Image 1 (cartoon, rainbow, N blue to C red):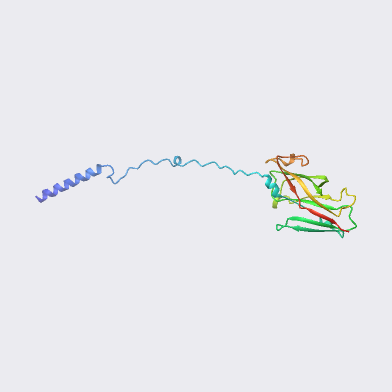
Image 2 (image 1 turned 60 degrees about the vertical axis):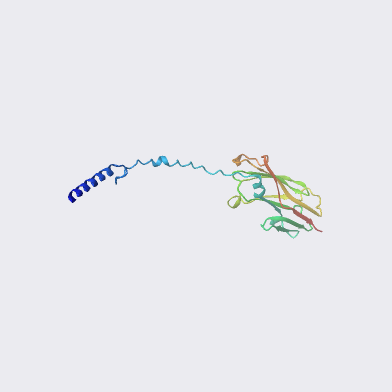
Length: 217
């Protein structure tokens, strides 16, 4: 009886193993699923768009073109002395000129334009005159500012004779430069601009520091 029971158990175990191997998922070997194409799963890279360089506005002209006026060093003499007042940023805020007799026949005040930023891609036309007690002094000054800042042109200079047209000098007079400034549209070639006539819708006025001239006796 024991031998027959042992045969019967072995047969039963063999039948169970065959049945389990026939079931899916019970086999030790797993069927491999086809892999998806990696190139189809990844999105195409976005095209590289260069950043748009912003254009300048009229505020850049007002802050970026500094105008100063004073007597140049070569005009200082025993009869002409100057006291220049500067701001904390070393910009000229006021110039006081003292003139003693004998009064010179001419007295030069030099106007200096100092561009602080580059206007190479948007030129600025500057045009105007020196004012003596609100009266314009000839001739008219005109120029074009293109470069600027630490790697461009640093200064543009123009001299005015503030004694022009005076029969006798007054006790005192106030002079300053007042210019119209026109910012050209972006991409305007500088070669085609005539600073004597060019205009633009982007317009502002630029003024120098005041220059007080006292004629002492």
